[in-house]
Length: 299
Image (cartoon, rainbow, N blue to C red; front, side, top):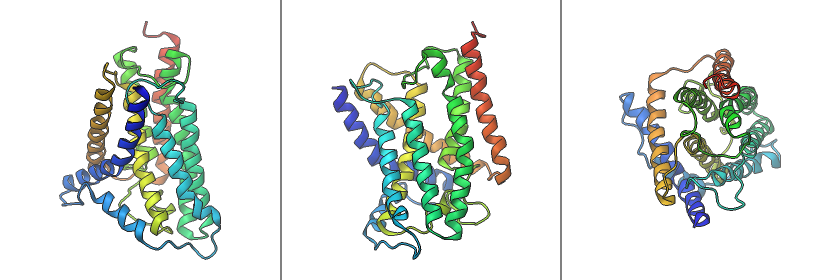
């Protein structure tokens, strides 16, 4: 039964990913006084781009052409490794280090393709993604430090019922800061602008169109779903029913998408040179929770 629920969860989450992205965009627009797109806009955009002709920059190589598929496959694997039903199927991989590796692999190929496009915007985006990644990765390790200190391993499991409210709160704050940075949302990046001085992730997809652009857009939506879901699976208690756990994860991801839209409507983008301070704060909060847990300072 666990295998069946996990397979259904992968299909459901992959299918709902554009919806979750649409919820965040629509909430942001409404709170800013704009009508904004429909929450289903992502599906229409994906269908339109998938049917369009695919072209590539004149001086690009095969790296540019395969990057969207590789990145999409890496994020799909991350989605598949998250135990959405609250239980892990026998022999089903769910190691955090593997998930971190897949996220780093996706970031590496995005940067590599940005350089391979031989365009100004691609190189700019690649440089910024690599710089941001250098701060995101240690912050993510620090955010999950409580789990390692508690269990002595790197397998995903809920800690909400096992740690104090203070440690749980620190872990939530640390991961929340990492989540915003990894997804490239405000105040880190603005996905709605193509302004050269501010854009980070959007600069890496400007050269794409057609099916490759559709794969890149679906991958971004999947990444939002995976990162939010990973946090909820890790930090929220599970109920006995497998199907109820899956339903709760869907509702939690949708609610968090609403929260992301609200945050983006309330904050302005940080200056690029302020981002290291932001990521250092995320790492510091995570390391504080890890220290308190590992040292037994709260016992």
